[in-house]
Image (tube, rainbow, N blue to C red; front, side, top):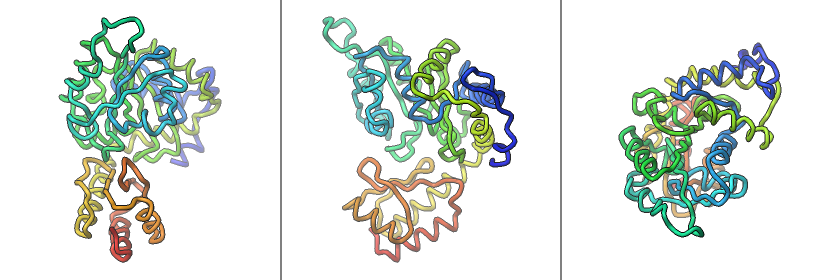
Length: 322
């Protein structure tokens, strides 16, 4: 990856003449099943761009509870995109509402002028705070149909859509069918140092490019990072190994008395009595984790080997956790 970055052909991406960025955008659009894509420095910016394009100030948008756009983007959906967020329960499965829950939240579109207008549904696949939970295609289609019948647009936060695709044995494009926009990240399990894309129609991407510039995301010879993202795209099949290591960790944690669900992808969530105390104790043992949705979150990636997982379990056992 570093060799690809060092030898990348570059140009000025602000005026759209960086050939490596252009190659990445075209390839990512094809993989995601969208007409066009735009490189962004981060997934947070990609989501904010999409919401800014889709929403008018004061519009309400719906998203599953603990979605990244609700909990992990510093309120930018409301502050900068001008949207009024409403969280939906995970009553359809981990990380997703039932279609009838979406319909009920949308409500009628013929209310008085001073009522909120619901115009956008945001989905997340995989859902980070639900432990990397996957939305299968048939459930995606049902949620999309419900939104469409009410006249809503749909944005998919697909930061980890690669993980969902590998877990389901499907191409990523099978998980984006019908959406108006999708974001996808190259710096999660794929290992790039930075970079995401936001994809949609060509008209959407032209509007997105202007919004990216407003947010300070217009960058010059950024092909050095796009080259890393191209290498990352070649690594999508490798994610199956990360999922297996996550299952290995979850199995080991349960043997030690933890309550850890079997993960669908590369994230392991475990409830504990005191998160702060547990994280401090884990760090003292040289095991790094983060809090997420009221639980301890362990994330497996390509730089963690099966032997590292076993060593982490050994240290956790030695530390007397949970």
